Figure 1 (tube, rainbow, N blue to C red):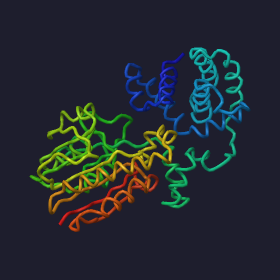
Figure 2: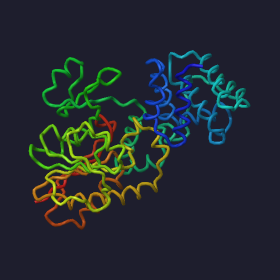
Figure 3: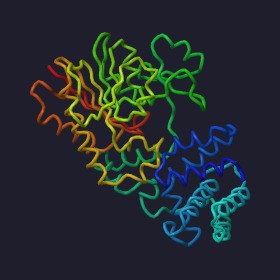
Figure 4: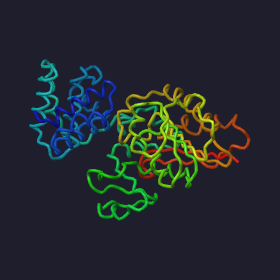
Length: 390
């Protein structure tokens, strides 16, 4: 059995139990050959991105409900059908043979005959999808949310963008542009942001999505100003602000994640931003990149779309409102605050800003709101609101 398929199956089983694909792939493939690690990543992300289509195809070729199959068998069939229909260079006999071996390894030997028979039926003929959600491999409720905000074509464009592997971007601090040129990095229209033109991001630069970097620019930090990053881990936006010479405090609720900022020249603070902030002085610049549903990142985190439920948005919103109110209270006169999320949902974005500003001091006002939309703008989906205090 190839180490790539074995690793992909193990990762997908752990993702099904609540793990995150990117983290698991890093730990499970670090000792594999580069080619095997690449195939494992392709299988994991392909099975997750196209999960709704794959489950429909399982039912089409097996005559059984995918939901009623044992979890391990369902995962193996998703992987097998993805290889047979969506990839081009993998021999069918290898897919079938190793899928059967995976079933036996998973102690589901009684299903091996069925898996063998189903995968031998798989072909590449076009299939009529039963509905829009299956065709776009997205939960119907998310498509409805996006349709209300962006229209039917906009929602479809977002969903299609999330079926493609995301491009990689790095942050190039001022003075290191010549290094970027030598590495064949491609400059973008966001100052300091470069697109990675090779498979792997180069070492020595922080990998940071273009939308994240665009939001960081909205802070407009200046040398000598005090800067607070309220949800700082893993530190990309703090490092971006430090390029301008600010005096930074990087805060996060998670002590382990705060440890990722040890190489960032900022004071570190472990705190819960939903509670009143412990600082006596107020800050000239504040960034609140709030924890959210992450629906703007489904291209790189496709497992999220199969986990999040409509009811989750209310919980995120309540926390985000408390955080934003506390951030506003810490903003100095003449200061500038950026509230942002990597969510596409109105409930976590415009609704949060409106609610938090409803009882804010009269000198606090909304300057602008922007939304970066996958399929229209490069990079992840992001929302940002700029709030100032006179």
